[in-house]
Image (cartoon, one colour):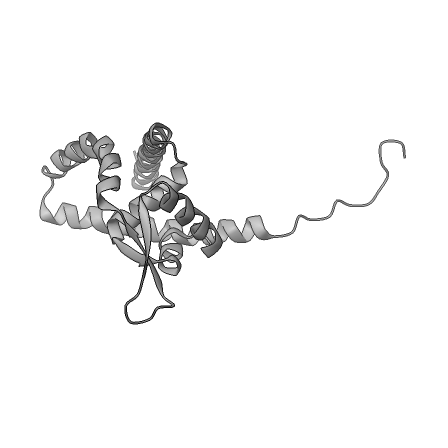
Length: 171
């Protein structure tokens, strides 16, 4: 196989592997979300909060690509379910942080323990250089997803084009 064809085949294989992994991740997350009675997007936002620990709604919007309005609704639902709480900044009472409630989030974490163990076991087989490459790959993938989410929002927010005026069915 020629070099360009081999590269194209490799790129397609990589794309398929990423898509399959991503799709199974979505299905896994949806299964957990169904089990605990929340939407999968709320569960994913809770994961961002679990990683960050304590952030403002604006920062969470930046991390997720969601609007601040969507974040407010999500925080309301997670707070009502007991997974997060709002905390005022001691220095600026106008500033509000969203913080996880660790003991309640831990109840969800148990569903992820087998996945975490398996992934950590897989990562043990990689060299530090390979782990750095994987970290770069995943970080770039995250940044790409943020960018294309913005593009998608712009596409969705565009007003629908008017249908051309012309003869109707009876015309």
